[in-house]
Length: 174
Image (cartoon, rainbow, N blue to C red; front, side, top):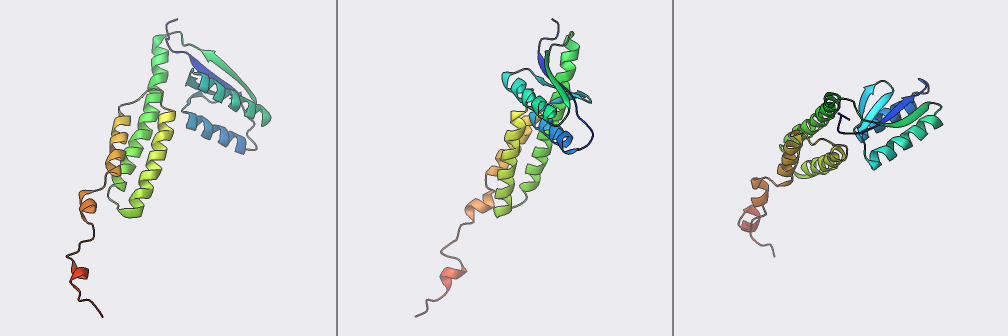
């Protein structure tokens, strides 16, 4: 077949009310990095993990009163496959760019605020990496910005308490 990559598709229909299962499904699809082809159809590159994840989602949809099925497919043209991959690349690139901007902003902070931001950004970077099937160039920028945040600014490294400062100059009290 022309489209070299195979895909796993979740085809579903959920009742509009209650909205909680629908919102939960959208969030989970986003966490997985799925491309929403049209309303009710989401796709991931075919791996054992992605197939299992979509099977779990399908079971949850049925439990919530909806209909769902999981399919494997392969586009009939290389162009169709390339378009799906480009959509995934754009979505991941936007996430990586947002992480890089946040790391740049956090680099202007110090102390506990900087440490909290670094921890959060590392966690978010790992989450994006898990759903990244296409490795956009923006990933390198995000990784670099977070690594730069992890290295302490020069001023903080050399600003250790000094024995010659004002505290050491005070006379001893007896």
